[in-house]
Length: 319
Ligand code: ADP
Image (tube, rainbow, N blue to C red; front, side, top):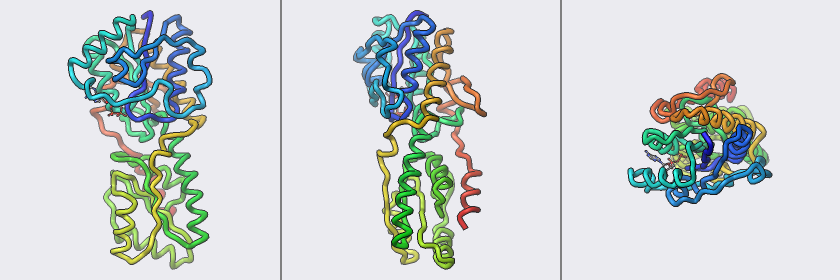
């Protein structure tokens, strides 16, 4: 392979820049040219593609977001859109593409691979919800952002003897809520994977108060319900006042943690190694502390399983 492309797609996540940097530099290291595709599949269709040199990805490893920008693109879901994309890549002399994104982006990458244009996927999402990898790029940074927020909320909760509800991201996957709940010492964690029992939650709140706890933190993943909805439910069932903090998009931003930079670098480099062997349709991941590559289809057909032992432990500890 003489020249490859790299793009970031779907929801951005901190550490994507480290992955882009690794793709560019690893390719150059192997004597392969690289081009960056700007604004995901939209840019691919429009031919928004520029050659990247080693220096072009300097000073980005520490930055959140993505230097290549990201986008969602409806046209790319169609055959016509995909053929246009392939035409643009051929015009630029590209022979393979690294796609950094979530499972939606992987579906797009697989579609291109099936049309004869090899793509390799790198998991970038704060949700940590891609099957086949234990971690995705951005999860650790988002988790630390949530923890920082919980710690601050806990200070004011203790001072005023209050119960706080913290709503975190996670439409289908509860990883962020689970890890943040355990690391933040939350009394209760509500995640999409587990049905909740409002009576049990109220019991816990009351028990905590009875033993003199001045604060309670409830973490709710957005996929279960909104923080304000939960507040209304607790008020209705137990007449307990709560305060709500919806963390929102701050969870997606910020300088990536060391862990996400390392993960981005490892994944980006491995993607290039796989791609320059001419292999497409593979996804990169971390399994049992080893960087692996596996059939990309698994990433959007298998089910993601959150680590439920964290849920159990957090319940045991929050007595
Ligand atoms: P993420 O990659 O974060 O899961 P999305 O699900 O929004 O984000 O997907 C990003 C983009 O990937 C979409 O805007 C679309 O262009 C492309 N895509 C998603 N699903 C498919 C599909 N089934 N076929 C082709 N392209 C797809």
